[in-house]
Amino acid sequence: MTGISSFRQADIEEAEAYLDREPPAEIDPRLEPLVNEIISRVADKWTMLILEVLNEHGVMRFSEIGRAVDGISQKMLTQTLRQMEREGLVTRTIYPVVPPKVEYALTPLGDSLGRAFCGVWLWAERHIDEIESARAAFDACKDK
Amino acid sequence: MTGISSFRQADIEEAEAYLDREPPAEIDPRLEPLVNEIISRVADKWTMLILEVLNEHGVMRFSEIGRAVDGISQKMLTQTLRQMEREGLVTRTIYPVVPPKVEYALTPLGDSLGRAFCGVWLWAERHIDEIESARAAFDACKDK
DNA sequence: CGGAATCCTCGATGATACTG
DNA sequence: CAGTATCATCGAGGATTCCG
Image 1 (cartoon, each protein chain N blue to C red):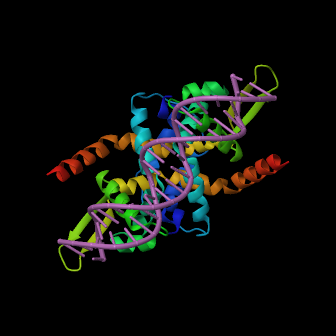
Image 2: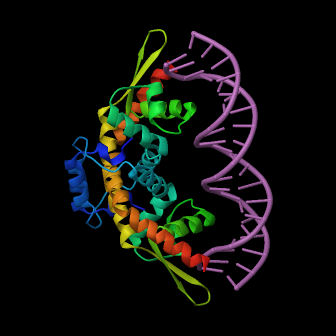
């Protein structure tokens, strides 16, 4: 897992550009709960990590993903992959051989989600220092 | 709360542009856990919702935010605002009056985080239909 | 009003064991 | 190998109460 390294220079430049702007515009308010639901589902820890390794390695077997995603249990791996398949983020291909072989790959939709997160990755990367010093200052102040 | 309506047209256009690209580039791998930690903290449900209402309304009192963020308990409101303050996302201003008055506002850092999420909002909004039909297809298939 | 403190519940997750 | 099933735990989060 190399995180942000799975974005191209073009992605990064464009995402950087829009990081220096300001609000707003108009839209159907009924969309909000739906969008929130999708984001909270999709932004979960394991989903993001699996998205990353699949983006980097391309097609992978079940146990390969398990090895690549550090700390994930078999249960959560299965569960998260099922969810992602349900949302249309990954494809699941079963080879009727013995021992069983199942391959996972990102769909175009899953791929585009990875790119959508580019801006957030850049933000986090850019502001790590700022955040850590803010934390330190806050904690120091509270300790008195 | 109007969700995506708190982004400007310029943000949206730029975010849309980079949604149609592909991977990768190079970076320090040690950043990954840090970035992941920040994202998972910052991408949590309440943080995103509070970010939204503050972005829309500007300066707000504690109870105002509580009313604007539907369904949040007092505990989570306090807790999330403290975290956000600690990370440097919001400022907390106490007026020594009676009854107490405390105002919250986004810092420039908090503001920039809201903009960073623009791409994810756009992605979710754009693909709601695709996701819902994928889910329906998946579920229909499983029911047999 | 804006919290802090307490208690309590429930769901997400991990560990373990079994199977096609 | 790629799961499913079951049990156990642990902590996030809600409800309630009290306070400056």
